[in-house]
Image (cartoon, rainbow, N blue to C red):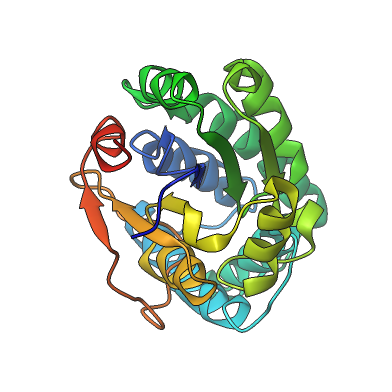
Length: 241
């Protein structure tokens, strides 16, 4: 590979762990169904949400750009259809507000995140977040963890008007950095969003794998093998020595 001058990171599943997300969302989802006065079992609720997630992920996988607010709206509408409920905008609004607060609280930085970012910054590398997320979630997470101390920029798919794996998002981030793709190492947890998207524009790729955690919104289409696979963020420091 060419000399690495910058490292672009995905956010969820990469710098932040998804370990607490699933067990946070399901109780809130079940509560929203109870307010519909439906006698649906918890097992059937989980199964229906899984089916809705799969269907909507495939539908949105064909889009080059979308707001995640819209994706999760359509997911909830489809979930209601599967369990035989009439969509109630008020119940959905309450669910969404509580779910977003819970999601924000459940996303925790991986234990070696700050140490890794600090080490890479000390070496003079250009550091960036390139995330399929709306601004309403990205900006508060960066501020909460004071990641601006280490990053040269952070970009949401909403700002770029493009969602990974669309090449437009990666090219948007490259333009911000003024670096060439061959000098960038892209780190992410999704083979089909992060790895496939970064490779198509010529970046080096690193897949980060957290045991027992699968990346969300995967379709099983377009996944590409990475240049490197790691289990911890600190392993990236050795890749750019």
